[in-house]
Image: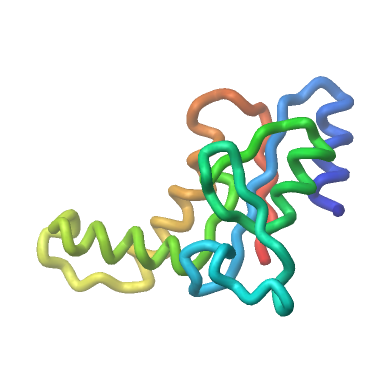
Amino acid sequence: IISASLAKLLQARGYTTTIQKLDPYINIDPGTLNPYEHGECFVTDDGAETDLDLGHYERFLNVRTSQANNVTTGRIYQSVINKERRGEFLGKTVQVIPHITNEIKERIQLLGKDGKYDIVITEIG
């Protein structure tokens, strides 16, 4: 609620904003989580199964969200492993630092790169 409220205040001041949520789950997406433990998931326009918080953000801020707005630990690791399998690390030993941390930074910066938003608020956890 704090993240969405902050974004709403920034919108009221004329800024274009969106919210990104980073979740610690090893699951690739929340669609496979037990709804009794985690709650329901929210499906974005691009078909991504995301944390229900994104649905609240969409309605509260009147901004469409996508798969880029929800990142899980599982998705981060999957991406790094896929890059390793494609040979993108040129035989280097893949490690948490720098490979996983670089992937996290790339995901955080992704929504801000297209210039669509003045501010991207990233909620962690």
